[in-house]
Image (cartoon, rainbow, N blue to C red; front, side, top):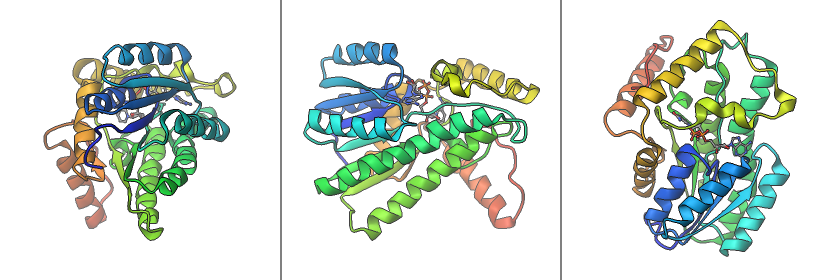
Length: 285
Ligand SMILES: NC(=O)c1ccc[n+]([C@@H]2O[C@H](COP(=O)([O-])OP(=O)(O)OC[C@H]3O[C@@H](n4cnc5c(N)ncnc54)[C@H](O)[C@@H]3O)[C@@H](O)[C@H]2O)c1
């Protein structure tokens, strides 16, 4: 889609950070109704009130746990009813945990893969058939990460989930073409470092998956992310505006940052792959 004027949209993880930025940017672009779907009830109510207060378009909230297929299906059907049919769906909810692959607890594997990958799978299963059946121009936008293209050290579960999220979005793009559903456009956002609440993701962690990785590597990774986000993380609204601008321009791979970060990191990664070298360590800057 190259124009969001008058559109109807839903953003998972819309109560905070990049999701809230995407919702705001969609409203700035003229969206008529934006639905925020999020697990965190208080933050959701606050975000709905704040975005409604902008006076740009209708904003509503649905409490949703993206890891639960029934919750996502209910959200899709409620949002469809409320808006008369969605045209933009942003599968954005995500969490982070750090640590070496072999030290990461099974609870961390289940939590992060559950939100970042299973959450996106649930979204694809509930929203894509509706977008196809609607027969109108629409856009499915998934939030992965630059960590889904270029792996970072001491972040095994996060990188695994994000490489899979990029693969899922690429597959959906192929499958929509094969199914003749080219009215559904797709983009995958691969943000760099954005100043959000991702370093406080534990706030939404289910008690049943409470065994968080507690190792030197997990602390090193968590502390360094907190420091980078505080010192040089991009404003999420600025990143969201940039990403949606690129999506509207028809790009599939989309990032949050202006400049040459994408070309440099992906270029180095591709060079290493073509030469058969192990991936070099690259900072996301
Ligand atoms: N912040 C960064 O630097 C960065 C970089 C690359 C990718 N990302 C990705 O951007 C997306 C948004 O993250 P953010 O940085 O804005 O973090 P954030 O913590 O500010 O926002 C994430 C949102 O997801 C919601 N959420 C968490 N678990 C959920 C669940 N089970 N069901 C529904 N909602 C749930 C949270 O309540 C929160 O509102 C994530 O997919 C993240 O991996 C972030």
